Image (cartoon, one colour):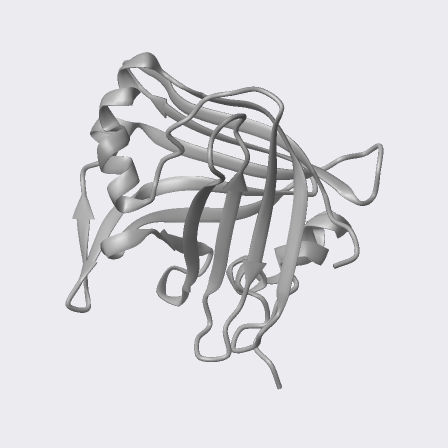
Length: 205
């Protein structure tokens, strides 16, 4: 019997409270070659002017989108792999007059914390995220950064610089095959650091 999807593991019974379009694009079994792609448009991709100083580090770790724009076409590829239980993401942003920008990461369910997942980018840098189902939406709230090294999870105080992340994916009430998403990194003193938002379609693959 196959294991339940990563977010179903994290949410437990609350999985059934997600909107149908949200469940459908995350119903991928760990230890499989399941694949889903959604396509859409980012109405805004933005970062604070001073955040440009962080971009060299962001590009090194594959963690930040270095460009800005409006009405940016995007596709997001989700896949599982037969050799592990992780969920892999490849977000491909199409900024005008630039090569496609890939933001890649993978998510693991943290069984010890129940409703948490960890999103990892390069070199073992991860963000702990509490997962919840709220009014049909899948919501992620930042619980801090870690560095996975030699089997250890070392807390990192990156939130002092980057702020706290909030992400949601919410069913579009006007169309059963569409959903909206937004991501916000907000610093308690400096305000918004990064944000992007858009609308996506889940269609036949």
